[in-house]
Image 1 (cartoon, rainbow, N blue to C red):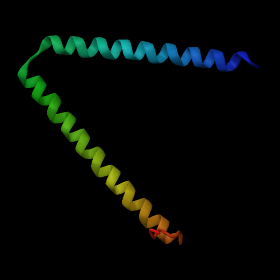
Image 2: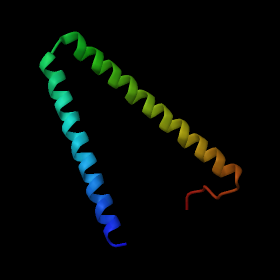
Image 3: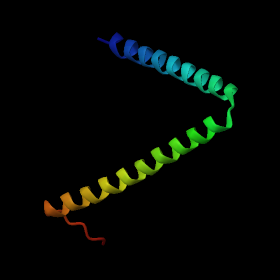
Amino acid sequence: MDWVPIVFIVFKALVLVTGMFFAIKWHYDQGKKGKVNERRAVLRAGGKVAALFVILLLVLGVATFFLSSELGLDLTFP
C-alpha cells in the first residue's frame, strides 16, 4: 500500500513535465513565425479570455452572495 502514492506522484510529475515541454516547444515554434497579424490576433484573443474570466468571476461572486443571503447566512462585517 505504501507504493501507491509514490507511483501516482511519479506519474503526475511525468505528465506535467511532458506537458510543459510540449507547451514551451509550441510557444517557441509559434514565436518563430513572428507575423504581426498573428500577434495581434493572439493578444486580442487573450484580452477576450481575460475579460470573460473577470465577468464570470463577478457573476460567480454575485451568485454566491445571493445564495448565501437566501440561505440565511450572516454576511455583515463586524
